[in-house]
Picture: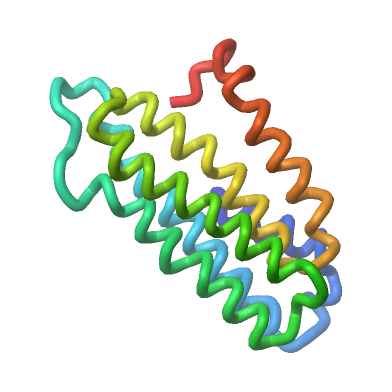
Length: 167
């Protein structure tokens, strides 16, 4: 479902992609959709164990980070190679990508050992805002305003999370 939402957003943000060669639309949007779907699937697989007495150990806790580590740089490489971004967008993308990757690494590494699993899953859900902001910027300058909005929501999320259970 998350990949369909992403593809709908791509069509709304860059309608000219629909009239260009299919590769220009499908390659970066397809990579982003697959990465987003795998990221959600990875932390959903962890969430299945929220009520277990022990957290899953080993490789499973690193999968969300590894998905982002492969997916986000692939999106920026493809969009840059296809010359679909210009100006400040690639720089902002790399900055947001580093923020999303650092948060995913912290959730899978140091924080995983010390926090309960529902808090970790909530962190992955919160990190979705940063990942989505990153993907908005991949559309180019037109994606900067939605990206700023998502980053602001990322900052407000802890206050909102007090009233809503996010896992």
